[in-house]
Image 1: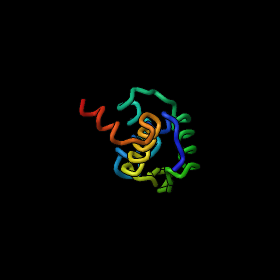
Image 2: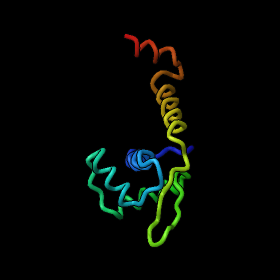
Image 3: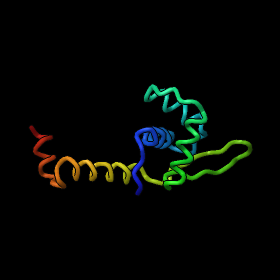
Image 4: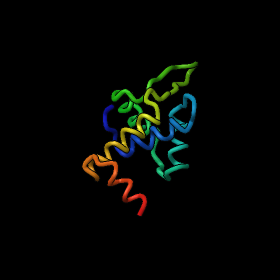
Length: 103
């Protein structure tokens, strides 16, 4: 799984929260509501296109609308981010993380 930027992550979180396929306008509205980012439509589409190239999203057309769906499961992404954090901050030692969490 390729790494994604913080902005791309916001787009993915919005897509995952939609539960079903979403238009770029729905993603744009969700990002603004959840994170306060007021991005232009072109900006959202740019992030979506990057995510498609990285294999995180797929698209389909229905009528005149394009819909976006996640191809990466949220749980898999969350596990990857946790493993990355544990590796970076705890040298891969999960027990050190648990010790910090129980202090």
